[in-house]
Length: 285
Image 1: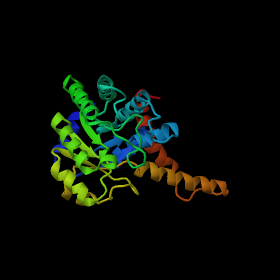
Image 2: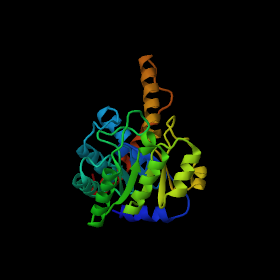
Image 3: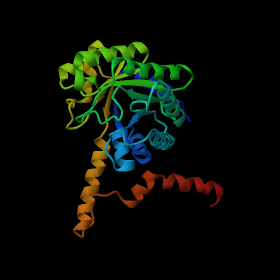
Image 4: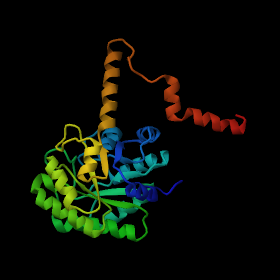
């Protein structure tokens, strides 16, 4: 297996923005890789929906997230960033979470400053912890990385929603100073706010392109010109999948076959049957 953390370092050092569709299971991750994207992110919103059928409001456990991530990371060779939510407790819990994600095969883990239980960053009702607890989470995550866990750290703040841009930018700067590799300001509300974040925050920055969310959805080229390194699309795949499934269910309910489907041969190939059968030939089976 390639060293995915080194791969991610190399990607970040190369010129240009990285377009990153987000996955929710091993199959969606494989589709992203086969489509030629060099990086993916395991979305907590999408995993909670796909695995439990529940909203992203802290109802999924750390163990379930790590289990889902292990399957995803095992299915692909591209780097995967994992949603580590709040780190699931105090600084020692954060260190344990970072260690578990690294052992599962993630190239990077995201830790955020919301109160637990957290919720999707583009929904109402979210609250953040105070500065001391927020910085302690990132300090612990970086300490675990420096202790030997081969994983990068993404630090996220949701402070813009409740406390405004000044507090959010203070936290972004503090997270960078503590050694976070990638900084993520959730839900800036205007292009000017996005540009200010990139201008005033050192290091690599990630944009969160949530369709119909709080942040303007800009083309990757414009995000790059502002100063972003990664353009993440957290809900695009699961939303598209849900749209297609609802359409297929509606057709079946009306006694029809869905109009748009993969051929069975195409689906078999995507799942891996062709490669499996070729490998079996080595054993005269």
